[in-house]
Length: 353
Image (tube, rainbow, N blue to C red):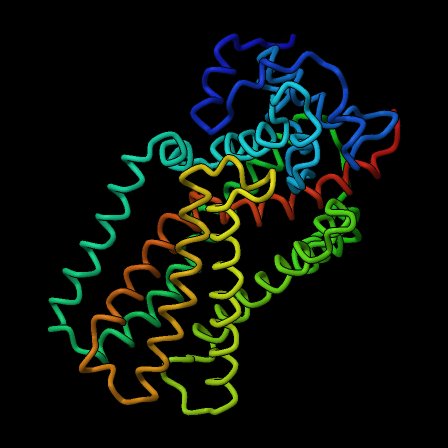
């Protein structure tokens, strides 16, 4: 029996959505969206589920992850119901549903709690730096070890259990019975969507620049992560690795500056309604690229010890990114969307009963 939650619309406002009840079911959004088919009225179906409070149907749906928020539906809406922002809010809500710790939901719903968590992490970094007497070499060594430990812990303790919960809600509860072989044969879909952002390109239509920006940012971020963690960018003497790290961090900085500029100007539909989690993600990513670039530059100029403050800032940004934004913030959308499209592929291969 379908359960209806009459308070669902009110709950969803805490995840950023505005007055989606202004929708009078005209169908403009469905007519505009490239995801709409004869069998799927996208995104109108999700709007209807939300209006009716069909929480279980939304939790078991992968459709919010298929949307890359091109903004066309919101631009064409005659009632300013902002269906694109509704889809974004549903992704935040789903992230909270997948998270077994419950922290994603708490941080999404409370800016005060988010700021408090960021300040506590900053205080922890400062207190640790005091224990090693702000020694540059000790901080560099600790930062490198912290990155490796944080990556392993977040994936093993947070992401893997959350992905199993996502799989349970969207595959198992929907009655999809897929043999192991199907998961293996369609695994390429996961990597294609994750590393080429193919769905974003298809969704954006003629706006290939946005797709290209996201693609370059994904590769720059992942390669900088590899360069710093596994190639020890801050400790290496290899000219190739040093230059590679500079290029990666510079690209991250330039692209995120453009993203921040767009959100400030609100020059596109997708930039009109920026929530705190959106700002945190893009600003901290910008700071990651900038401070990493400066730390390596100060090392090469042999002035890091006299300017240890820049490394303290970098460590603080890194710790906040690794402990708060990556496991519980908008970064997770990159992971869940990739797996969501992978699960869609598995579901489409299900033979009719």
